[in-house]
Image (cartoon, rainbow, N blue to C red; front, top):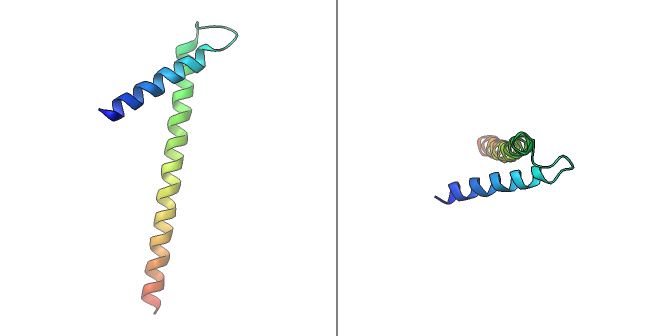
Length: 68
């Protein structure tokens, strides 16, 4: 339920930001889709970088423990 509320707030925020242009609300949904897509990409990139850091840390830990 909390995830749905967060997703709803993201969509509303994207539509609000997209509508604040000189051309008005005419193409707001299309711009909002771009804002949402870039946000999802950034979140995915952030999660992937954290997962990569964890994998590298685990690999270094395994190599250290087997070499002693």
